Amino acid sequence: MSPYRFDHIHLRSPDPEAAVAVYVSAFGAEIKQRVTPGGRLRIILDLAGVPLFVEEVPADTAAPPAPPFLGIEHIGLGVDDLDAALADLKAKGVPLISGPTEARPGVRIAFLQAPDGVRVELIERRG
Image (cartoon, rainbow, N blue to C red; front, side, top):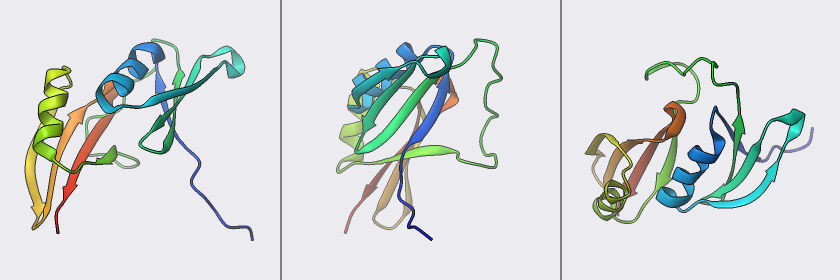
């Protein structure tokens, strides 16, 4: 059996351009490529070293359920200074969902709202 390796995270959006704008401006993602497989726009980003595909879906596609739910629930990004990151994201208009809280000694977290119902967790690990 050949070994597995991580390849990408794939998000769906009725407006991939608007969604990508948030990941680029708020989280420093870099646009790598635009393709149209099957006639739908897919924008490929590098988000903190992780390939993130944001692909167009029809506007009437069902929204994700409110968390918690089964399956992949959020994207986690590590930061060195949670308070500074939250201040930066607040200035950029990214909505804070919860936090910051101390998940356990030396670990602080906060959740933010990204486009299309995606939640982003920021995590600061100390010591």
